Amino acid sequence: MKLSYNEFLNLHIKSLVDINILNNENHPKIPYVSSIKILTNNFNLSKISDIINYWKEQIDNNNNMINHINLNDINWMYVYCIKYGFLKNLEKININIYGSWEYTHRKYNLNINQADKYLSTLEKMSNEDINILLNEPININKNNILLDGTHRCCCMIGRIINGDKYINININYTD
Image 1 (spheres, one colour):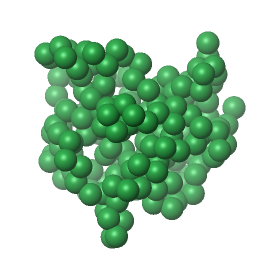
Image 2 (image 1 turned 180 degrees about the vertical axis):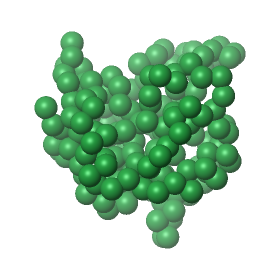
Image 3 (image 1 turned 45 degrees about the vertical axis):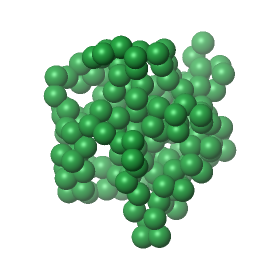
Image 4 (image 1 turned 90 degrees about the horizontal axis):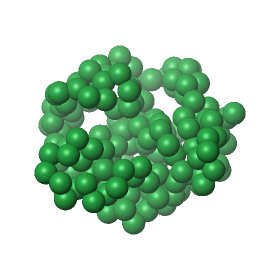
């Protein structure tokens, strides 16, 4: 099933992990939860349309993302999906920008400066390439909450902010 533009705008992105783990030192889910925290303006937003409106305000007159004061080496991942979008030849071992489960437990990830340097050198995907990537379905629950595919949705958020065409995302509804 394909997700229309309006259905995409009404999806919700929420942490699927208890946000209190941010109080635990070295918890393995801190990068995920802290990235959701930044993406959703301190967990104040969940609906994609609200997230888009918030991040539109973080763009300067030259269509460049303004440096967000709270971005750091741990929480940059979802925001950089917005900033850089869908990229060709992305090495998933060191930068899990599309959320590949194969590399979920990697021991090394790029810091924010390394990520900027690396991502800025990659070529954007064509609409055809993005269509192929988005054929792999994301899962949504009955409450319209995204269960996976956050990286891909953030790349799509970036496209929308930049005025690029929305491309339908393949989805599965689950319980």
